[in-house]
Figure (tube, rainbow, N blue to C red):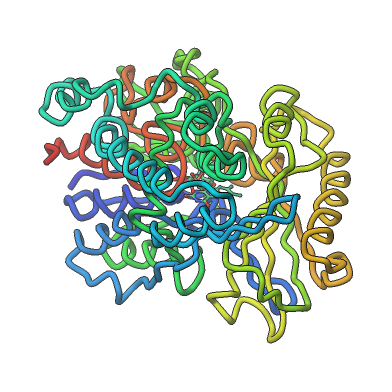
Length: 491
Ligand SMILES: Cc1cc2nc3c(=O)[nH]c(=O)nc-3n(C[C@H](O)[C@H](O)[C@H](O)COP(=O)(O)OP(=O)(O)OC[C@H]3O[C@@H](n4cnc5c(N)ncnc54)[C@H](O)[C@@H]3O)c2cc1C
């Protein structure tokens, strides 16, 4: 049996463990925290439950696929539902837009609220699907670092339709050229933030993201986001994967250009295969200090981070849904502040996620659990205490203005999370949520491969390597990595 060690029980680490255990390896996962899931974590306070990290769930098939691979029925482990309303949008001029999952209904809503012709919106969503179909096989589902990826019929289709990928315009340029309404431009520009990028820099290729929500669907787990790592962890354990929690890997042991083991608590353990789900920069800096690091890859700009307030609110807001956005009145200035001035704009776009709208046990009766997040720069040693105080005031004023309720008076429990702590808890470089940003057109080629070019038997999965951050891409990285290890061919 191939003895395999995985460093880190993030979503990609768990998924890789499941795939390799099914393929006949004996897998042990070492996790420095006392819980599975990495950024997918939760906490409880005074009768409220909060998911600490991700809240947007797309492509649930990638989760289900793991249960099916193990010959199990996904619904016996994990239930989720498709959302009829994806997001409620609030603009400073009083405009309110409901983003319905049904494309025709959504297009009609945009027409009624902004005069944007329905045909323009529906055509945009069709093109989003077309771009996704042309790019996904090359850039999302396969290793970019193997010849076979570039030499098959699907790749050929991508080359022949290269002009449709919209690589030479920014997302904002493409959206301004498509839509008449600035409100609609802002709504679709927001999708750049789904991987922590800047719509005024990222290539318009990223306009593939709305396809996921409007054509495939936005989903939510019946028992909160935490049920994703919980149910996958349960499956992994049933298959025989061993998780060793509270175990920080100190070094990857290398001999004859081969990764042969791990140092944990000053003891050496030996393995045939090693997979790092830890952030790429910390893997090289901390675990492989004597191996020359691929500096140019590791130095790529990181994605944005987040400042989150978790507020237990002693009231229900029927005008809010599971996902709500309160837009900044000046989106461009907000992104200039985040990505160029490396600070936080005083009129930030606020995301309010309320899981108790679906999981009624997440808040006491008559209350709601608010996850209130703004995008912020990654950690470069800013004065976060000052930023947090200032942002809290700005957020409260903006929500109070929009909801016509003094929100501060309704908060009965409060916690927060900032980039410093995200970095500390999950070892994510600079507290970036999604590894590297996608702010230039070469970003896809500047992520680390899923294998080591220098060391035999060493592989990588997770948000800091190919194909990038976010739950779906982390699950894809697990599939790519497991296929590389087991030498499985793509279908
Ligand atoms: C606030 C927030 C909101 C987000 N929102 C969304 C969203 O809505 N939708 C979405 O799809 N994605 C979202 N993301 C991004 C998503 O959470 C990540 O891309 C994904 O969870 C990363 O998974 P991963 O497998 O790379 O591992 P991580 O979750 O980064 O976990 C890595 C694990 O490795 C462990 N580790 C590191 N070093 C060592 C070591 N030396 N020894 C042992 N263990 C180690 C860490 O403790 C950690 O548990 C969000 C992230 C955050 C923080």
